[in-house]
Length: 319
Image (cartoon, rainbow, N blue to C red; front, top):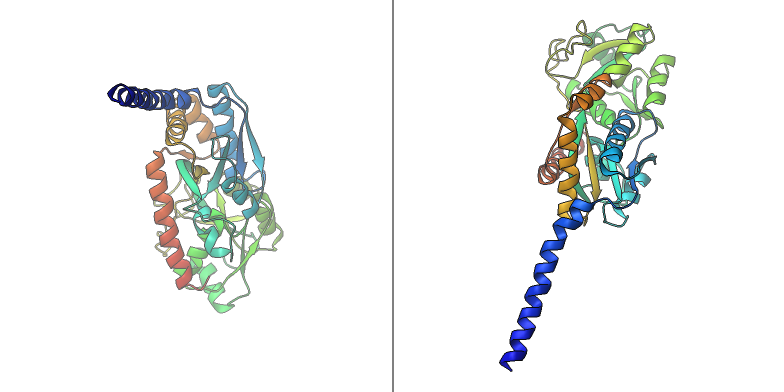
């Protein structure tokens, strides 16, 4: 009996040792096949641009294909949530992900429970832009006009779960105005709506705000940042213009819940290593993006905290 028990315990110990020793090797070997990176927004959005930067860099580093697939809307996020949790399907999304379950009744996923955070990839300073022929030329005039004509002005976005929607909704609450949200299929469509005058406001990233305002197609009213942005030094911040409003528009990498932690940590570290190179810094700067890195645990905390905070804000404002 002693010999049998000794054999059983010995075999069990050897099995456990094998499991422990092979897990890190498996993570280090990741990925062994193509990785699909889903973007729940249309092509041309900041989310899409950042996803392609990530895919290009990681494809080279991993020696495997990293392919970006645009699946606009909640269906894209839902597809990721339901995918096999082996690291072959990832998602780059905006912080609008945190309110997806709030802005859509019976959303097919939980933004916290159904996803594992990997890392934020970057953030993009946003500017409030308006059509050049809008009667209001300053932030104060925009707010005064909205208060004078409640419900007549609108703001565009690439959709309810986009970071620019959150910016518009928070601005609406902070300014105490009634402006109507109009969703479009993509960020370029949302900007075009402002150029045409179909929408009166949009929170645009630096590159779009700078290029379109320089061409006289839109007017940049204020930056939703703590300090003025060097690329647009003549545009005041919201705070300077009289409204204490700062908004951090971040974009992050997530996976379906259940992907092994070592794989999440490897992907996070690979991005952090890439961020240290001058080439990656230059690539992000050329897109007016600020690179960011996190551990998977930190990313999970960020998503959970923002989901709770923004849910409370949106419910308070009746959204």
